[in-house]
Structure formats: C-alpha cells, structure tokens
Length: 86
Image (cartoon, rainbow, N blue to C red; front, side, top):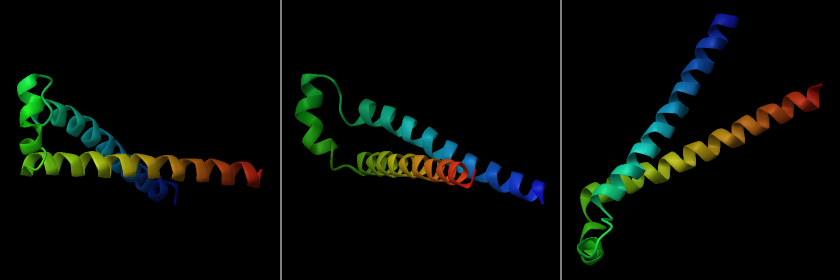
C-alpha cells in the first residue's frame, strides 16, 4: 500500500518539477528570441510577438504558471486538511 502511494506521489512531483523546468526555460527562451533588449528588438517586437515560436513559448509560460499555482493550492489544501484533522 505504501509503495503504491509513494509511486503516485513521485509521479505527481515529477509532473510539477517538469512544469517548473518548462516555465523557467520558456521564460528564458522568450526573452532571448522574442523580446530582444535593443532598439531593433523594440522595432521587431510587433512582428515577433505573433510568430509561431513566440506563441508556443507564451503558451508554455502561461501553462507553467497555472500549474505552479495549482501546485501551491494543492499543497496548501493538503497541509490545511492535516492540521484540521489533528
């Protein structure tokens, strides 16, 4: 029984760690490829913002942020339930 629960918790933590990693990498890549810190980057940003790779990176950033937010809600709910039970 404990082994099954351990495997499930390990899988859930792995998913959250994957989303944290993707969110971090997506944010770094978005800054590098979609919002250059220069005059030319400023002038190109209206064109780059609608490109396929920038849309994909924005999706990864947004979904990563939602997943991280959900992780904190789940963790807070779990801790609160344990405190209430005791």
